[in-house]
Length: 372
Image (tube, one colour):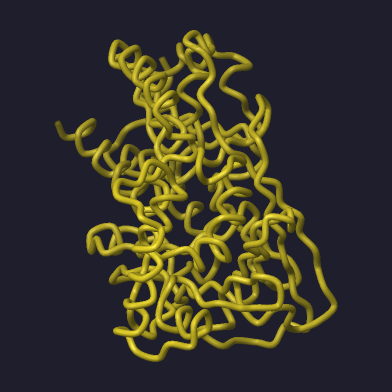
């Protein structure tokens, strides 16, 4: 065996594990089926702008250790995520806050906003929310649900809101203050040189092979290392022996425009169901909006289209409903019997992770693996 660890996937989980193992004196090989490192946080330079190839990624955390860890590899700007929702010709601030409520109903105080939401909740008469639609209405009332949640969420998940589990909407912030900061974390920002440069620093000194598919030579790769860190799809590793887990996928349509400013904000969500994309990202605002910098005469936008996942597509969001979670448990139990394989990341653990959670989980995994 040539290596102590074979890491399958050069995304955040794989990069953190590979870095820590390499620093501990272990021999590590990272293989990646794509033509680039950094997984879904990959950024590339277009027209002097760092473009987020696979959708907007804003690093945010309240975990001091995680924040200190990633700043070893990158300088972060002070970007604050403040998306805007567009419904027809109407624009609303996100997360739902006093600016949203003022635009929706003309209220100006938290007491007025609470009273209107409470009135709508009472009128709906929902005692125990059974699905996402009922959960949303029981949180913010019918007006906000109809304009800002129903269409967007239906597009995102490919199902009507009354067929989606309620837990999906519970992470949505609702605040009775005039604050457009979407996240409620202590630290927030984006690497000034992009995420690709950050992951390059993580993988410095580590052998990395791109355009390399683990399944093209599974037996050979398993034989080349004492242990495998697998960050791909758990069900694919076991050849879908219990059936395929469900995901949602995304399609991105990126365009260079001959103007300095297209929409005035990094992220604008389109909440009407009839508009096929969920949001437009204008990448230059991730940098110039908060920190200044040289003028760039052009701009780059990306339209994001949620799609049904099919084998061969990139899986982005696990469908963590009851059926899929039960199926995942079968695979997880099978994985326990693989002492020489570590499954990690969003796909390997079939769990929605934000970036800071991926880093924290990878660090926990490496501590357990390398130090006991």
